[in-house]
Length: 245
Image (cartoon, rainbow, N blue to C red; front, side, top):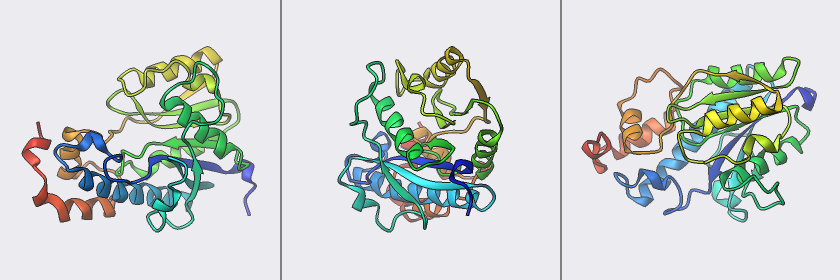
C-alpha cells in the first residue's frame, strides 16, 4: 500500500444535488429539476475521471460537499471508492477568508487531515476536463519543493487548485465568482513566495453558452459518458437556441 504522504487527494467541490440548489446558473435554459439531474451526471463523470487518473498515479478521489447532513444524497452517485468530506466553511476560519473561500479552505483542511501529502480541489463544472490535467497536477505536487498547481478556467476562475499545505492566504480576500479569481490566487501565492505551476486552460459549464458548447461535443477532453447520455436524453426538452445566446 502506498504511503499516504505520497498520495494526492482530489476533492470535488459539490453541492448536494437537490432541485433548486444545484447548477442554478443553468436555469434557464434548464428547469431546476433538470439542472439538478444534470449535476448528478456531471458529478459521476468527474469522480470517474479521477478514478481513471488514479490508475496511473497515486490519487484518491473525494467529494467535498455541502451542506452537512445531506451526504446521503450522494449515495450511489459517485465512482466506486470515492470518499466524502464536509466543506461548508463552518469551522473557525481566518478573518479574511470569506464566502466560498471558507468552503475551499474547509475542504483542504479536511483532506489533509486524512494524512495525504497533497490536495487538489476540483470544480464540479468541468465534466470533460482531460484526464491528463489531473495527472499533471498530481505529478507536479510529487516533485520536491513548495508549490501550488493552478488550473485556470476560461472565465478567469480556476477548475483545479493543488497544494502541499492548506495555506489560508490562498483563499483570503478573493472576489469569488468573478473573472479575477485565478489572478488573485496567483498574487496570493507570490506573496507567500510559492511557485505556481500552471495547467492548460479549460472551461466551466456554468451558464447557457457553456452548456451549448458542452452539448456540441468534440472539445477533445474526457468522454464524460454520463453527461453525454443525459444530454442525449434531454436534448429535445431544453432550448438549444436559448443556450446559444
